[in-house]
Structures are given as C-alpha cells and as structure tokens.
Length: 186
Image (cartoon, rainbow, N blue to C red):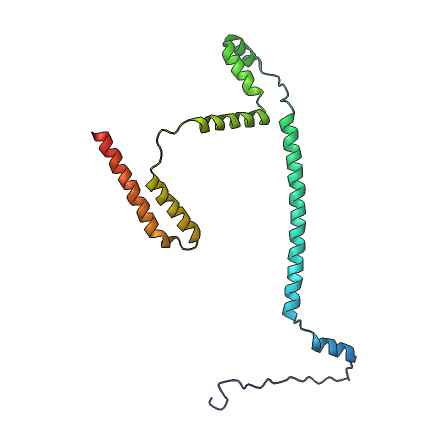
C-alpha cells in the first residue's frame, strides 16, 4: 500500500512494442509523421466541421428552393380568381329571398383574394394611424418603461438585476392610478 509514489513522476515513459518481423518505414513517412502538428482529435474535429459546413450549405440550398416554390405557388393562388362553384338549390332559393345588400355582401366575400385582403389591411392600418389618441402617455411613465426595457435588454441573462427600474415603473404607474381615481371620484 505505501510502496508506490502517490504522485506520478515528471518523466514521460515511452512504450516500445517489439514486432515479430522487422518493420521498415521510409524516412519521408517517419519525418512527416513526426513533424505533423495534427493529432487524431484535431483531424476528427476538422472532418466534423467540414461535414457540418456541407450539411449547412445543402440545407440552405433546400430552403431556398422550397421558399421559391412556396412563393411561386402562393403567387399563382392569389392571382387566379376563385372558380365559381355550383351552389346547392337551397342556397339559390335563399338568395332570392334575401335583400340585395345582403346578396352583394355575400358576393363580395366570395370574391376576396389575397391581394384585395392585403390592400384592405393596409387601408385599415392607415385609418388607425390617422386617428388621434385620446390621452398622451405621461412622460415619466414612458421614461420608466424605457428604462426597464433598456435594463432588460442589457441584462438579458440576469433580469433580476433590473429591480430598481421595475420599482420606479411601478411607482409611476401607481401615481397615475391614484390621479385617475381622484379625478373620477370628484
């Protein structure tokens, strides 16, 4: 138990294997192996990196090809008008009994395409932006909110470091709530 050293010696021991038959290598091969800076692990890492790069490039090609197909198909679908479908007899009878405005709305809904919907969305967004806001946000609350957002972005791995900014924001919102309550009670 105590016969051997507990610490390894600083000398590197060499293992020599004896072969049954003499083995001869050319001097060039021995020199290239001795002068090589690569080890098995670095060669395997380089090979793995090359494989990953190739897989990544193939995936990017596939994604580009599929995105092109998708955009081509979506363009074709949005450009072609909807094919008129044969409606059931009950629906035709119901149309004759309904008013002309309801019938016009129903026809408009059937003729909606991707382009017309996107145009309507843009128009609605413009209308919403044109509306005036009823109340302007208090500048102190806005500043406190921006401070919280900035702190959370800079400390994205440690959000608990932003407790001061959050507390300031809560105080400002509480002040606004108290002011609102006082205005409504009076």
